[in-house]
Length: 131
Image 1: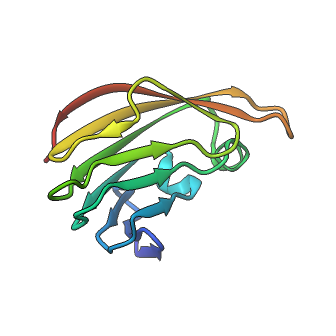
Image 2: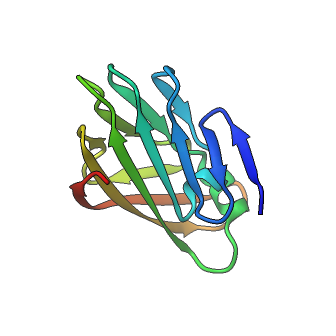
């Protein structure tokens, strides 16, 4: 399989791994970059914000099932804490920041599939040293 490119960098279609190594402090993910994916933030020396896609976009991209996982690996330097922000219809539960040299895992659960009322909860489930 080949690789796709986006505002977040290269995404390996096999591993679903996105790199944000540019100097942009704010990134909005696509559903493909969020669902069962890992995002590695590196190179920023300022705090960064990663915004999820909307719940409608996530639901439209989901296959069968109603849950997915997502990790953020923060390899930034200096004051480069990563904050996760919610797209429309997405509710964040638990810790929404990822400190430097840390990986935070999230579980996404679709709570409403109805068109026009889509809803997703993104739950912080753990933190460990960045790899």
